[in-house]
Amino acid sequence: MSYYVYMLKSIEKKPVTYVGYTLDIKNRIKLHNNSKGAKFTRGRKWKLIYKEKCISKNEAIKREYYIKKNRKLRNKIKNKLI
Image 1: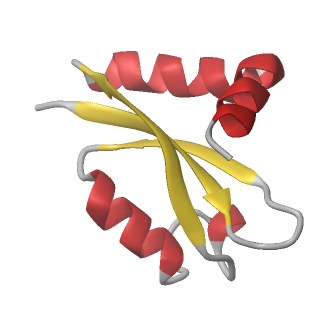
Image 2 (image 1 turned 90 degrees about the vertical axis):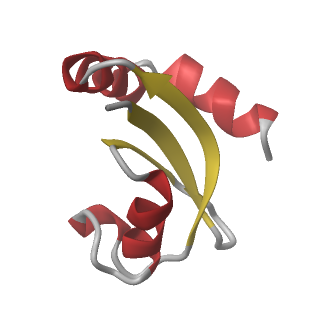
Image 3 (image 1 turned 180 degrees about the vertical axis):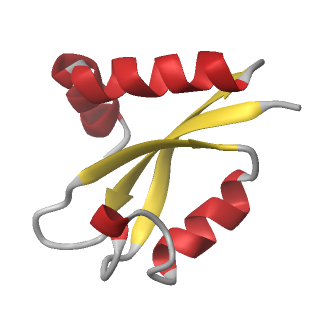
């Protein structure tokens, strides 16, 4: 079973990003776009800008935390893919 760490960017004038992890990335994005995901993501439309495959849930959680806390890396990913 592979987990994914992903970053979403909102589709609006002043976009924001969201980082999460999941087993099923397509379904998870669908949930976010239907306001059924995390509370922060509700009411916005999202597009996938980054994904990374992890071999365990523990690794995915650690990587998600690292990306969320590392503002330089997060901005680098966001700006590279805009």
